[in-house]
Amino acid sequence: MKTRFDIITCQPHLLTGPFDHSILKRAQDKGLVEIHLHDLRQYAINKHGQIDDYAFGGGAGMVLMIEPIAKCIRGLQAERQYDAVIYMTPDGQTLNQPMANRLSLLQNIIILCGHYKGVDQRVRDLFVTHEVSIGDYVLSGGELAAAVLADSIIRIIPGVLNDESSALSDSFQDNLLAPPVYSRPADFEGHAVPEILLSGNTPKVEEWRFEQSVQRTKALRPDLLTDNKNITS
Ligand code: SAM
Image (cartoon, rainbow, N blue to C red; front, side, top):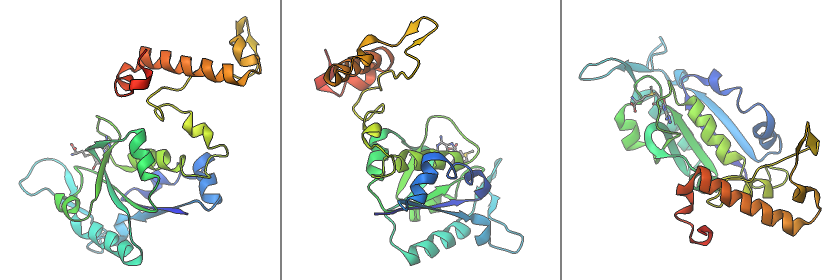
């Protein structure tokens, strides 16, 4: 199965970099993911490239108009069925790992990036199926947030990572933070790697990693443990 992202933005240049490297690039090269950027200005209401206008009722800041966005979304929806039309917005549901897991099961996803004061409310009412925030702060535009969301989804699509168990052992997959990791040298200026990791005893290593995860979570994010009845001791 291939996952297709159609990202609608008035700043497409902000999104050319993030998908051209590393795992996100490899996912596309492997044919598992397609990313299509759509420049909102191509759908402008006039020859001046207008896509935004003043807010009714006054006040500072421009609003992305409904007509260009409607035209773009309807054009895409005429070509294929979409599982989600996601608007990136600070008042959306905050992105977390379970949400990324759920979205990674979808095949065709539109992501709409806002700008200025955001999009005309009627876009949200008529076209948007999901509203996602990447945290309680305000960015200038939805592009970086869209890249964060897409990355969190793409890396867990089956086949994207060379070793899928790697994603499963990351933080948040199990209500736990990840354990510490070490690589060579085994001793750096007197700072040695924990002995157990050099033992070759895989079950013991796994046990140690689990204990480290629990300790770390208790220390740094005890809130994660409250929902997990198995890991309270
Ligand atoms: N007036 C909006 C508000 O107060 O909720 C903020 C608009 S913000 C300056 C412009 C755009 O950036 C938003 O439409 C949204 O697409 C994006 N954005 C800003 N912060 C975001 C966040 N935390 N998560 C997701 N998108 C965000």
